[in-house]
Image 1 (cartoon, rainbow, N blue to C red):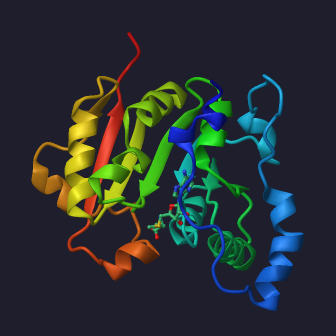
Image 2 (image 1 turned 180 degrees about the vertical axis):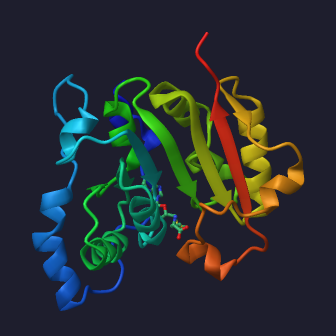
Length: 232
Ligand SMILES: C[S@@+](CC[C@H](N)C(=O)[O-])C[C@H]1O[C@@H](n2cnc3c(N)ncnc32)[C@H](O)[C@@H]1O
């Protein structure tokens, strides 16, 4: 079955919030089409370099960028890298566009839907870093299959990451924290970065606070970093 038709892999979040301001609506109409990622509809894979005007040293991917402050920060701190941000929530996309316009950012591309559509179209070993910050926790056990961290998505991320590439997961949710530890321990393609559990509690300097984290609804944030192990 094509993964897009697989009911277990459907997107479950919301796509629309309150009405956009005139300015944001304008950005959705003028800026978004210029920086949107179009996916090939045949068997072809994406050519990440072709997305950017200038050659990029590496490609990074953010899954569920929310209002986009972290993505914008990384893009400005790393102008030699090309970043694809994926977010199905329209008001979030509009938030990111504001950052892109105000910062004159040229190295971000946007996919306004489920990140897995992009992941499935990216070539093997084409991504250097993946960010998954405060994914929806789906705390009820019967919704556990909706959590982004899980065997199928981890296999897909292992495929697209370069050897030695990094996968970052931020969460403030105790259930998601335990779940991530469990799932990552069961996945042979990744190893922890960091030596002691306390390392997870210290924010790395190049990991700015996200909007969701600032609310810290469920307690202390955890900053997980995993290394994609070299292929055999
Ligand atoms: C709790 S919010 C966190 C947003 C942001 N990362 C932050 O920390 O502020 C989770 C976000 O992930 C997005 N999301 C959920 N599933 C996704 C998927 N499969 N692909 C892309 N984004 C997704 C949701 O739309 C939502 O905006």
